[in-house]
Amino acid sequence: MRYLFGPVPSRRLGYSLGVDIIPHKVCTLDCVYCQLGPTTLKTIERRAYVEPGPVLAELDEILAQKLQIDCITFSGSGEPTLNTCLGDILAGIQSRCSLPVTVLTNGTLLHMPEVRAGLLQADIVCPSFDAATLQAFTMINRPHPGVSLDLMIAGLKKFRQEFSGKIYLEVMLARRINDSPQELEAFAKVLPEFGADRIQINTVIRPAAADGVWASSPATLELARTLFGPNAEIIGGFVKERSFHEQENIGDRIVQLVGRHPSTAEDVCAALGLNADLAHEFLNQLLSQGRIFKTMHGGSTFYKA
Ligand code: SF4
Image 1 (spheres, rainbow, N blue to C red):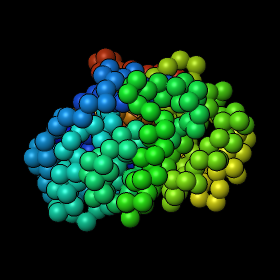
Image 2 (cartoon, rainbow, N blue to C red):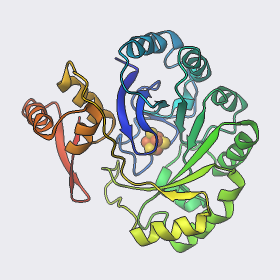
Image 3 (cartoon, protein in one colour):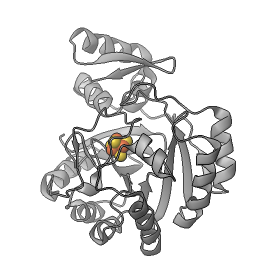
Image 4 (cartoon, rainbow, N blue to C red):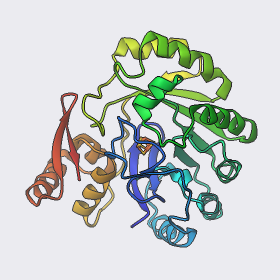
């Protein structure tokens, strides 16, 4: 599979079949917390990076396998709204299955009518909003010079007026970058204007693109939850039982998984339905082959490709 991956357990969305329609790592931002590493092409130019045909052919193949899938999620190697075919791909998916389709986006291009029009075909859109002040925006998101915080805010408001599906807005907090009391107050002023169905407060639990980026304290997250209003929630780790599916090419699937999401051994077990012994056997084999490597973050061991 080139454009689809998983299904993988998502902390927000359940068992999610991933759709990746952007080359690694093309994005309008270069967030310090990005788990995919530094942005290699920071751009605001939209292009047909992947046409609908090859993506939908892979979807047909996956659906025929009848795996446990709770939803389809556009995420992966970069910012999906940079692909001009996003709307057509969404339409193709909706015509093939009734699974809810979610798009994770950094929200920077929502001021463009054509981006909003494409996204109208999703069921859930999860935009990020990591800073309410220019200083914090610059520090945490390291945007392309053509990205404007004011335009982003205007785009989020406009999208809410046009989109009848669910909007789950994610706020990623990082210690001493965007989580001071002043920054949280600034968030609290603007967040109600977005009309999000949920405000999901996240923090840095996986290895980040930049050094020195750490999780906000539980007390800070709790303060944010209080300030951000009744729709705000702190996202916890996602664990879900699933039945064991006979997997072919388990090693390849592990490399694919940890290449997209740095994962602990427990994440690998949950994503691929493996018991701990088998997962460790494969992980050790891949380590010795040099196909993956280990890194420590927040006291946990993560595997990356
Ligand atoms: S976290 Fe998302 S928006 Fe930020 S650089 Fe990574 S891919 Fe882009």
